[in-house]
Image 1 (tube, rainbow, N blue to C red):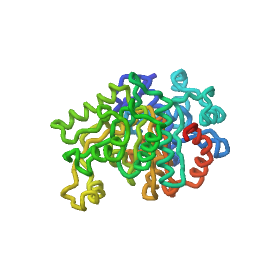
Image 2 (cartoon, rainbow, N blue to C red):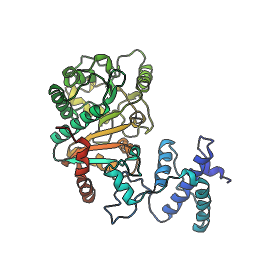
Image 3 (spheres, helix red, strand yellow):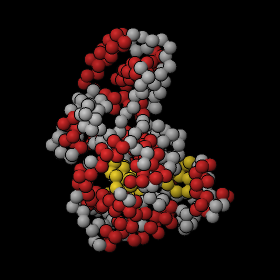
Image 4 (cartoon, rainbow, N blue to C red):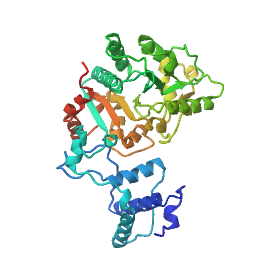
Length: 399
């Protein structure tokens, strides 16, 4: 099929199937735009809640994945209006050619089987929906997330030739989780001897023993209280002679251990994860990041409100780095983060709210307290609370 040059303009690929999918996406988007509707990839399947109507199609997911990963901007501003009939014929031709590449649409029953953890269901485990676990308090978030981490480690059964790899955050949100993990370790319920960790970020220029460095934070609040081996702890070096090389080495270390099994993160009120502030690329990798003025002002309280002492740069994993993990767990607590949670799950993917990128991850688990749900729709909250029985099975057998 002949593809118009203006349709394929900007696509840096020779893959004809990718171009066909992009062309098909444009045709869909054009008709939706004419009727003043927006395409939005909903991150969770709520079809059963809304009168059992079918949720977003798998084809839409394929298209949205391409638009996200390739950073292609659909052309919403075409002046020529082609007829619906003509577009329908084009779509049918493309669908006919692409039939073998388009996944079968799951029924509501099939999706429900997957959501309920039916291993014999037709929905592969690697294609789970985004899950949101709503708990009463911040303390409950710390307890639940610690149990989940402990269960993941125990189920993995790590050993000398098989390490469990964790991605870890800093900040006040994960402190409760760390305290609970320490208690579980001291009670003999979990060991970190065969666990390797990679932290999200570090300030540039702060000595490792500085009270505000993330090296200090992690050893003070977690590592020194458990049996993890120092050589298995990986934190970016903000004092390296070559910061770019340090970032590249960090990415290589992650790759060398086979990737991260579970990456845990927190977010800021503006939806940033690590130091991926609003406007960051959703396919970014570990890099040197100049911090925004809003971030500097927010961090000043940790440096005696003296702006001159606040580091202006940091090393941070990228959104793409975290997206490469096999599973992502994001902790969100407090009313001041409720709008960010709303942006993360009820609106579309947006680089101004970097946490929204995890709508596209096949295994995203968000844990929040009641206060963080204040901006969510009542139906959304009710839906996810109705799944607490399912979510409780995620930490089954953990006392």
